[in-house]
Image 1 (tube, rainbow, N blue to C red):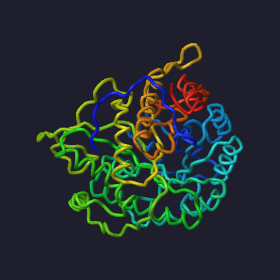
Image 2: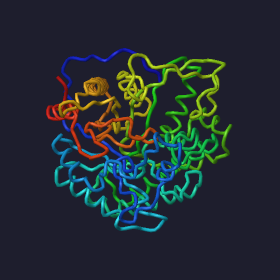
Image 3: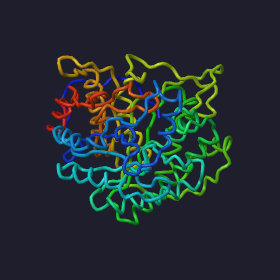
Image 4: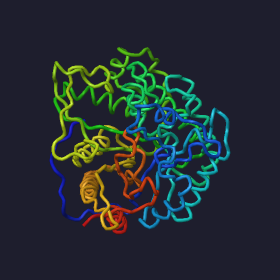
Length: 445
């Protein structure tokens, strides 16, 4: 997956198709708080964030944005912005703490879904966004079956009102950042463990999809974080395999690519033929940036890409976001076109795209012009892809709220809405008001 560095146009009219879905996304551990209320059990992120040295400044998700208690206020903000859809994740340890069903944990999502529907916002439920119950482990093959059981419980309760279901969010991160580099929970640094976790996550997706199909789910999805690569094929092919095709091919074709299969076998002894294949209705695409790569015999490689010795990651071009990520909208356009070409017939939904910037409150507002420029460029890139035939159905901005940014704690703000982490007051940024206008006219001037 190779992209060019051509800048996107910043003017002109971009009208999106009728029925295009505009929305925003969040994740349970990043916003809910209330980690010890109503029977919720600990997740791997509770354990990880309370382990000294794992998260910046010792931050935890114990309170986060207190969305658990303030969800009505947050849904009212969504309605004011005109959102068509809201993607949230269900907290597995709220529903099955210690493996025991907890009805009170699902009650919260009952209330949330009803509130969304009352304000004419379509709920999109993600079943797993990294907050695995603390007693489970993705290295254990039994975890995939436990995910299917959890899926059945949640869908049975909410399936009459939630039409769109996403099994997993970014399984690459769960596997290679959680078990490869150890920068995320559960903090394991082992290449074999990373590939084993990835395989079991793919099995969990397939088994969960079977359960959703059997239960009559309207639309089944999985969300992948995809990373376009720039550089010579001798280096980009491997990283594309590990970052993208390792998940795309099993999900959309039912098997690992041959080169990826051979690479995995160097690190882990897995039965790579035991993946059930369950077609999905839409592919969720999370896009933030690209990887610029070069051959460098002296490079130790990247611990989140086992076997990448001799490949160097080059610095971003231009002014990056606060995460240090290159801003390159053309990468999104070419990613959408690549998916349309290589996996034809797969409808697409952008389930995350956004940027962290050093927002400043002045005179009661946040003039986040950098974020507006970022979103404007990426919306135009998506529009260009649609014009060239990409079957893109919607765009969910990350994120509705500033929130707990995993190992970086509360230092990186992605939200359309600013959260004061002391008072918990919400303040829509200029980007939120701008986004409202984009949604209202279904396009850009």
